[in-house]
Image (tube, rainbow over all chains, first blue to last red; front, side, top):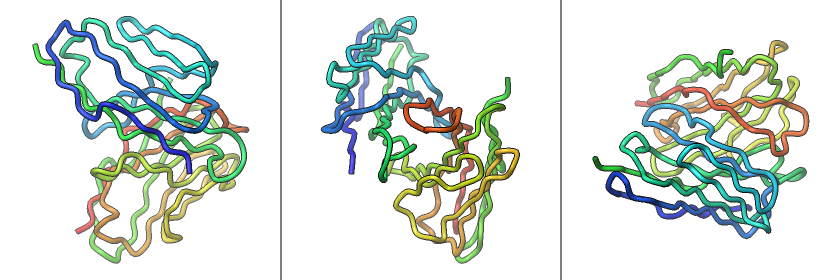
Length: 115
Length: 115
C-alpha cells in the first residue's frame, strides 16, 4: 500500500511570511498533483508535476518534484490571507495492481495566514 | 467550459436507507472517479469508471457501488447506510484511457449526512 506523508499538518503564519509544505513517499510517483480545498467544496487543482526534478511556478507558488519522484514540495512566497485553506498533495503510482488510476492523498496541510 | 458537476449538494438519510449520488464529468472526459472525504480521514479512493466499466475499486464494502452511463456521467449508490458513511463525496474526471498521470478535476461534492 502506497502512503503519502504530508507535513506540516497545521501552519499558522503572518501575512508576508514564506512557507513550505512537504509531501513524501517511499514509492515512486508516476505523477503528483497539488490541490487547494476550501471548506465544503471540492479540491481545486493547482499543478501537476510529472518529470523528476521539475519545478513549476504559479505566481507566488513554487512546486518542486524530487529527482527520484518520491517527494515534492510547495513553497509560498509572501503569503497573503487569501492563501488560507487546505493544501493537499496527491500521487498517482502507475499502472497495474490496486493503485491503477486512483490518487493517493496526503493528510493535508491547513494553512492560516493572519493579516 | 463547465467543470465537474454533482448533485445533490446535500443529502440527509437515516440508517439503513439507500443514497444515490450523481456526477457529470467535464465534456470530453471519459474517466470518472469517486472519493470519500470523512472528517479526520482525508480523501479515500472509492471507484474508478472508464468507458462504462469499473476499472478499480478502493477498500470499501460492496454496499458501495456505482455505474457509468453512455454519456460518461456516473452514479454512486450506497446501500444500507451506516452512521460512519456521513462524509463529503467527491467526484473527479479526467481524459480517459490509461488513468496514469492523468490530472483529475474535482466537482464540488455531495455532503451526505446519515442520522
